[in-house]
Length: 631
Image (tube, rainbow, N blue to C red; front, side, top):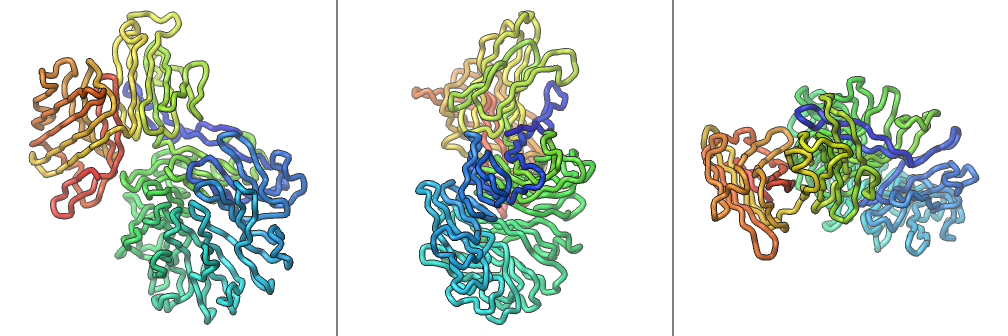
């Protein structure tokens, strides 16, 4: 396994841009003349499945394309098949692997036709999903749900006697057997590329057939099948036939479908018929994903996480200022924040194939012929995975100090070692101001409390200045500031997603009629001293409310004052069980930067002394008033 630290976007250290980096890991190392097929990943990101003709880990000495599973945590490979397998996918729970093969793994494929199989990794058993008794068709491209109970696939076989013309159709396998989702007895069109929701509730595919009576021109349209309702409906409609829809992917919860379309959908949002990525709610609302100030732009191979927050795709755009050569790169779009993050950074001439997001959007698995590590000189396709840099926690210090960071599971990283996966500890003069800096980066920050210990550096001048700050979700908070002598041995913390009993409202009214409120319980005690700051950020705009110092609050734990034109009231309460709570209100100022018509994904950041609380959630907007409410 090889790791690349790829620069993707900037944070800040003492007012100067400091890089936040994605971790790109090469999984396979295929010699010239051998090949690697498309990869799939489970919900957690631990298990990656792929096919290869290479002798992977010495497990495949003959050049047969077999199916392998890679354990990211242990760094080990396991071979699933011995006589060939193609297009493997893994269930969200990591137990089942579905693939196509012409081998006879179950004793029911004597004719050697291409069939769909499911392998149970727990019981080490094969189950044959399809069976073409006449051998006049094939079944390929399976898609599998989280529990491995439902598998959608393409077939040209006459399964259950429902495809007598042997056209390319989409079927769904479940406990009752194989059921056709597309059926075109006239043979006037075909159906392709099924995708299934993680919860098994939805199957999406594309079709040139007139399956619902709304596709008389036989253009390629997006179809959605509701498993519970047993209902098929046409999700796109291009009656002029100027565009087509393709490459669907479904969120794990079944509420969203992403796809590529060059049709002028969404009430005329794509008049130039650009091959853009769209997202469609199950309820029927479609929105352009790949659009910027210049309008829609070309993109391909969309993927989506479990709850529809993160959408990945490949594009040749310079969306964040880090792709000036317009090479094909993986980008991630945050649906709530409406922001782009660049994951890969490659030279021209590279290709990227089949990106797949994990359930949280924290990692993306893909295949590429790029050589980011200098270990792919033949430029053959290899399997990689990369972290989402927007989910990184970065702790930075300027001055002669060292940091020890302990994560919520008790794992730690310091100058000498790390037990936190992929975390890194860097030193240098990152902002070129003549002062030593420390940077600790933790990809895929988990929920809970990160404890940060500040230690004096070797030979440090006790009077030299020091400050420590943390960045998460694009928001940076100053945790500590002083001298080596005053801060050595002290602690700070970053608490991710810790609010309980939370409520928040932003009412962005023009002029001085805006209002912001926040109420939250925090499972940790209050610090004794230090600054207080409340902040809302949607990734593009933010509002900051400095509220004095903890040690200067009145006897009831209150701050009352004027901040940025707002009348502000804050109360902090320490509770006997060791938790604390916060009540905040700001009235009479201007929050029109958050005005609009759409819901917003927001980061609410609260600094209480050396403790920084970050909470990311969706704010739902009232259609009548424009008010945003934390939901």
